[in-house]
Image (cartoon, rainbow, N blue to C red):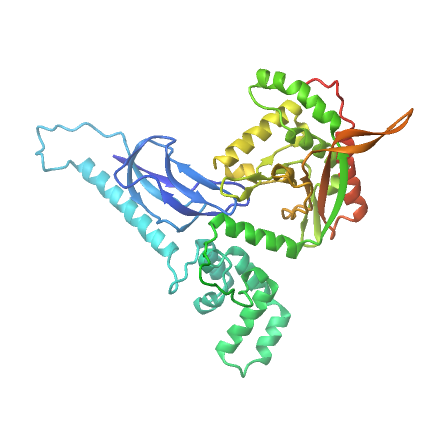
Length: 453
């Protein structure tokens, strides 16, 4: 019999590791090709890892909550292999031929080597776990075990992440910190560590502890945040601390779109087998406006601006547990309305069933969120870093409005909505932010009621 090493597959450009959340198979279970063996979670999305072969699960090399690096072996699967035929009449029932002994020995050697590798990988100091990436960084930068133990971790259960290491190294090698350490020669090692930790937490508020505890009264219920909830909380705080948020608001008359959709939606559903919602119409207008104003389709990297070539629209979608996820429509400006509608329905449907792939929630260059779904007429959404803008779509309302005609003005019933544009004032000024959202509104108000779909 031969063996196969099940490795953690690549899950996107920015995903280097994942946390094992659940084993779907136990040792000894039969596994079919493409059948899910375990569940993992990244800071982007939850996913399953399928087997590439048919076989039997021989060995698990990680436990639940362990952090696994991309490319690492997760499990050993026993598979059918080519072997020479043996004469069973010449060998007793309790004996194995030389090829069989060699095969078993090879399996044992593979499992033993894998175990040793994993044990080294997950070796920790006290009750702290360090991922292989963090340990390699510490080794390359000459960080001692004592230094590593003193670094404040912002990851799950206080784990030290790559960002924590980069921040520590920045402070460790900065002149101000070196001077501080030089002039504090008379201080104890404990005092120096405390001051160093304070410097790190000051530059990374997300790692700092709460200033004051929250009182819990009798009858209060304490609810632990979910893993995704913690990640969203961290990302939102980090975004507000990173970008200077400014908002512009435009009211948009979508009466033509309302009437046009009402006229064509039944035929569309019959022909395409799915519903035509307002979302793809709005996404099309946003994609057109981004082509008109490419400096809204950028990212910020320190003191540099990255002008994106592709227009990849993030679409905030609500999950059953109340959290949000942002699947991305790649090259949205190249899709016609039918293609946009299918992409929107597909991503939204799979988001609700937790069936998105890691690559499908990465690479966004601008984000749209529909706050009107919950009845809000407008909102001030938080920017999805490192993007520089996000558009909130308010609820469509039937309102009295002034209608200008060649024969004079009169009051009529119109369908209107607010577009709320949050943008990063570090790189987007008020003129650009306002012009962009006005362009989106202009495209929607100029909708062709005779348009074929």
